[in-house]
Length: 197
Image (tube, one colour):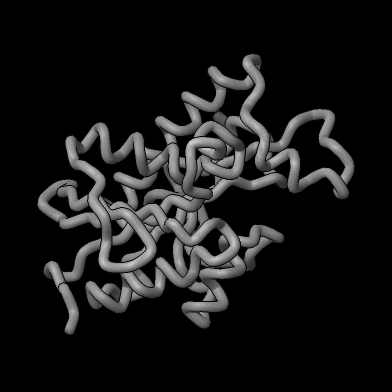
């Protein structure tokens, strides 16, 4: 049985559950949907699967904010569960993730695309059997990146103090972009937000 709420839109922020991951680079997706949840005066509650859910409205459109609790590499399981349970079409899905290939403080909004080496996106593409869903990629690249062998440690580390101002601004802007997606669709959102911050 579906828990349909008049074709809601789903904004899924990716990250890892647990206190030790809260302020890490890989949890930017969680940070963005947390910001949205706060600004929309919604609240998190347990879902009927491996995720937490907040129900909000933007311009009279129902929006489901989602944080998978499956850990990053299995994010697709939770996202698929939400889409099936609430009978949400792929065109109503927006995923928010961190991105190692994009400079810190920069957003890239896309209507579709590959996983770009991101395990959370790879999981969603696998579980939904499509790459045609919208996403906001939030840059975490530094000028002096660690070698590839240390990438896992880098994404699971907290932001440096010098980065925090850029992170706060990026999270706020990504939340605004997610709201624009609800109001105007992915095309307008790309036009408005694919600029250097």
